[in-house]
Length: 125
Image (tube, rainbow, N blue to C red; front, side):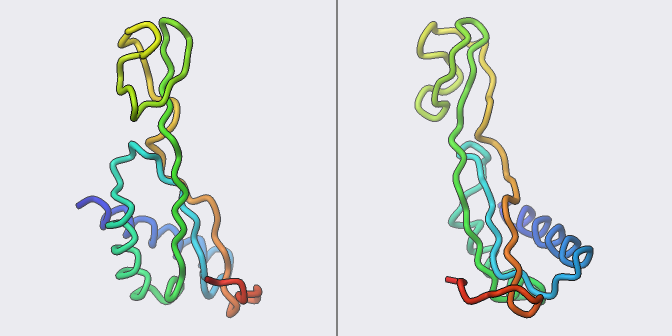
């Protein structure tokens, strides 16, 4: 279960960012996760709930996950196609000379600061 390790790394990164920016409380984190990243988002959210409750700067924070579609490019015919539906083989020309453009990322898109840090936290859900 690598989700736990990723959540630990994410929590550490957020704590470091909060310390650098004088942020006392993070209320919401938006994370973009690629559909072929290997991250099981349900399990990831469970790990987030567990660890965020134990990190003062993240306590009570909400995790929002935005999926990133996996897209592959074919070097042979120069076309893009949806990776999950077709895999590594290009559906247009049958070539295996393909590479993933997007879909394996895990990116912190946005950090919303809580009310204790001076921001308005009324819009938390």
